[in-house]
Image (tube, rainbow, N blue to C red; front, side, top):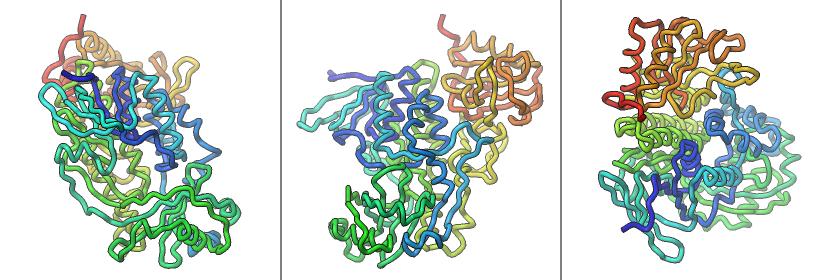
Length: 540
């Protein structure tokens, strides 16, 4: 009846789709990825990888492979912030528009890095295959139907040959023009089109001297009536300039001949005779739209298919990779027999709120950079580090007394349910690791080494339930020791308290003190945050 059957079908082999395949593969779930393009990206798009994104790659075991792609010390470019100049030749007098906080050794074991997706997509694709997935390029989704047991998709290759694929679940990671979203009829809300721009990838050796090694994330020049942003976070040729154009004035991408693009770059540089070689031109639209639903039955939307916004802040690909990770561990839980539909529902509950908040913050930055600020955007801006590392989840998979906004200033990673667990350096034997390294494929109960009540309850509970649960005791004589920090204070509990952390390193629940009935408490808590009405016995 079907040409092939797979556990998960992923539509889209960009950063989000490939990351989904990697994360699922690391959880033991093979996938089929179909992509309408003939290969991975050939252009250095989405060049900024946030610290949280690097944490996810670290947890999946591919952090060193991605980090190895960094050319030199890209961190210094991020420290330069967002600049505005009259021309790039006037870089010494640049105005600093934004100086975002992005990471810090006390906050994360990782830091931001620059690398174009033309290089890191290759690594993601190789790792996805290594972990059991197949990637099929030149294949387009043309139909999708679903029932209570799975999804039936029609995929057509470049030669017009159709194949019917049956999957337990389907993930639409196929970009802003998502065919998955269109076939499902999912609406979107937001401001719609904000501006139009053309990405000009070019080589200009003289720019190295003109910019005098001034580091920056983006540098905007407005000359000749054209606003042009310049970036080279990926660390090597080509440069990227992105002039804005105006369809309402009759302008179109076709107006940007190579000759005009060279002239725009030269004018922005303030060097009318500078040698410029145009490598590629890609028109795109800056929009703000968020899908009304990230889950429709057995189909899920992630990345730009779910939320699209102007690139200001670099939240796009990173937010999508965070979507992928949130979804992957929950899909793996269901496919391995311990997750539930209720747990899968929390994907929309958590990521829709985060995606919407990030889309708003991208708009705030967009108004500032495009000179549309009246002072209000600056007051609405939340620091980047809160957006990338400090966002909060509110869902049935989080048990919390308080429900602060998704983006709450100042940054607080102190063990509150719904936040990413605090980063502390630990020691296990001769090995140094972060608390973040404790979390991947199970719930983890963190407690003090001197308190056996929580630990023993967790061990007994783990032995009688299918929900994966580990207990980690911190302190002298425990499983791991801190390197000086007080773990209990960092997690907001007493020395007799306990914290339950999800596979994605987000805190699900905590008890400040001990309990007279720790096993009963843990049983009820684990059932609730895993989406189960009651915990089922472990298979024997």
